[in-house]
Length: 340
Image (cartoon, rainbow, N blue to C red; front, side):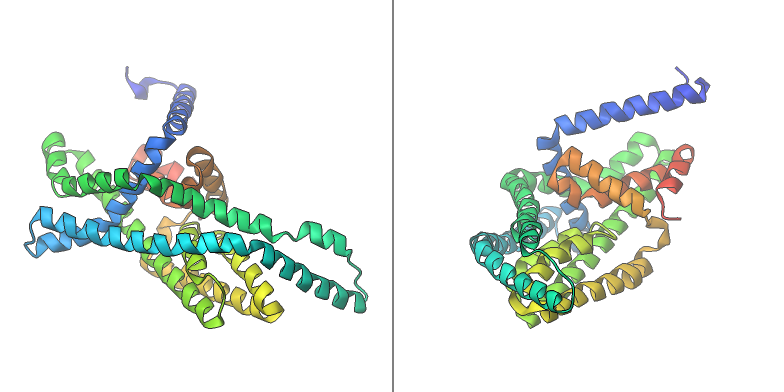
């Protein structure tokens, strides 16, 4: 059947039906899809290092083993440190909660002395660090649960990297050197790789800055907050705010209002510098998403794929946007997803 011969209404209805079927299939296959997406994400980030080694005439097998070994040691070592921090932090939450209540009582007393009356019982009910920290625990634990399939992810990354060098050659043979899909695919692949690499480097910089800032301040569980800042930096606009909440709250417990202000200042600085200066300079304005799309994609991918879907929501949405841009018929949808 000729798709172009269909009426616009039928095209829209057919597109919506296909979208519903695809989403339903993704949600049903979450247990398989999430490890695969993480594997593809890791493999995309490892591809430049692999290509660099191969350009230095390192055999492909040895290059893949070296790259994967570095990834395993890095992720494994950092995961052990963070896991220890999470376990210890969970034990300390009751103590932090008691200290927070003492601080809030002092604040309400100070406000009462200045004519602002607040019920301490209401404050105790509304300010519950356990809820905030439980949210942090769920996000990091959800990511950790996926890493229990580390062996599957490791094998998938390994096979993807082995195929990385030969796939373009296979695609050219399958589609023909002059086929229009070849240029579109190469442009799409380059755009996705550039976005993921730049975003990951910016996120690493964000995590390092937050870690150093909080370490100088003397805040507890610096590695945990640095990891949270790294992960949530993949969510623009609101990711830094979400990452700042538990750290600022803990800083308030440890150091009072002044310390919480210093912690919040660190997150504000890194959000301004990384999000508004460095990232746009290297990534360009054409890859931006509107704030509404960012929020909706966070909800959508979180619903479909769980906590990992929330962390990968923006990279996944960017991949969809780049795919829409590569096709003239769907380019208008990419424009609607953009920030301008």
